[in-house]
Length: 338
Image (tube, rainbow, N blue to C red; front, side, top):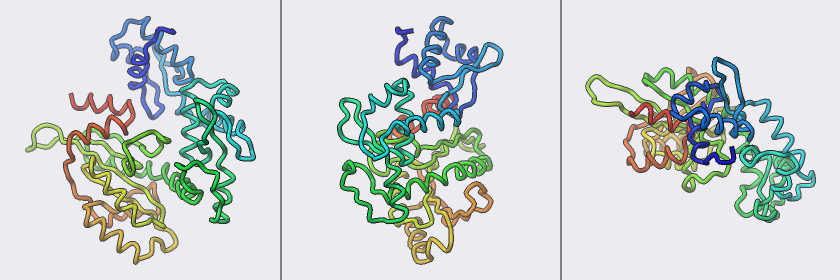
């Protein structure tokens, strides 16, 4: 198993469903066209590393371990409990050794906690870097926005920004359910909804290059040759949405055929003056504007501005797919196209 190549691991993982569904060993081996010994070696290494879990079915099956919500929640809590309560930094390598997690498993959990605003990176810690708790800062920010952040690393957002981000993240599960329902009614021959926001601090090409969601779909038309590919992006914001969100959404049109800004409506927000400005800027950039109260019910969404369709440069599309989308979706797109 020590002779398993990184490429083999990546290729096999790319075929395992990203949504946590199981896939049969027979189907995987047939798709990969590998000899049985080669397949078993790669699969077993990924199982030992805690990345895949074995399942039932004729010939057996596998699924992504990290998609098991109970296991993820338990392991994230275990990691948090290893961090000093006073907020001081601790070496990643020390925490990983204490927990006994593989490199892949530890990195997955650490990045998830950073994305949720519960953990911060710290300078020091040796080659593997260091982290610290952020929960005390987040809690303080709810009560008092004048948090002393002088000890934060220079590349970290403010406490108030982290609180806003966490509250946006709370909207994601419901909005994803609504987006799935909406996409099912758009007439695509094939489509996938991808959550792009939860990638931790993974490099994605610069500021405003990562939408919260993307829907990738294909349609066939009677009088248009070939398949028409759509990439529609969605940026989700709270009801106190700043005007900058429009420009952030506009940046996504570089690689999207349509881009939408989806804004929550609560307790009279956004204010009509602010909403009027947001609407005007969306019209100017050709962006769609969605207002929602019930994020999971697209029949209640108000499409305040219709998104204009454009055709981005193929190079930008390739970069977006290769950098932003999951390996499993990249495999599906290649299958749809060929």
